[in-house]
Every structure is written in structure tokens, then in C-alpha cells.
Length: 138
Image (cartoon, rainbow, N blue to C red):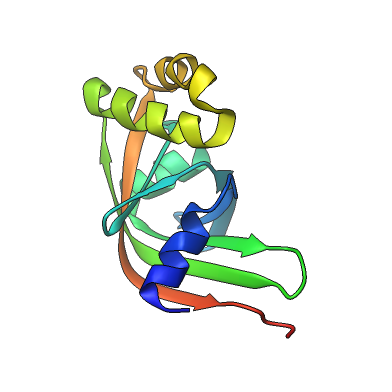
């Protein structure tokens, strides 16, 4: 995929990302996340005490896979390093944008407020590599 194609693919509908982080022993951990693109960053929230939250605080390296499970199948994997913040105003802004994508505008403010609280973190995955293929089985 071209850059504009993988950006459109990642932003299409409400596809959930599968985020891979690095555990302290070096093994991978994978968890689903809701996300949005913001320029060259992929933005999501998580709990600071979750496995992915702790992993990202210790070692920001991560990869996120999004796929279309319908024939002819497509996927995009982004790699980068996450930067975390606990700024509640910034978190509320992004948590509301993320919620609008996944639960709709009518519930976005409620979900945003629920996810922008102490104990949560806002993660910006600074994208430095993308592998994306469309029509894999075509």
C-alpha cells in the first residue's frame, strides 16, 4: 500500500488494533486497542497499571497490527516508540475523538470522560515503519 492507502486503511471504520509491547523478560504481549491517527502518530489510551501500560512506560517499543479479515484480505502493521502522558486535558480531547470513532458521536463525550481519569495514560506511538499489503489472496 502507498502511504495514503495505509493511512486510509488504518482509519477506516472501527477496526480494532492489536498492540504488541515488550515484557520485561523480552517476550511479546498483545492486546486490542481503540486508536486514531494524528499526523505521524497513532494515539490510544490505556490504564497505567495494565500490562501494556507498564510495558510502554518501561520500554516504549511497540507495533500495532490492523487487518481486514474478509477476502481478499489486507493488513497494516505500524512500528514505533510510544510516548506517554498523564495530562488530563489532552487525554480528554483524544479519548473523546477515539470514542467518537468506535461508539459514535452521541456517546463520545461520556466515553471520553470515562477514559480520561487519573490512572489512565495517553500513548502516542511515533510511527517509524509501516508494512502494509492489500488484496493478499487476490
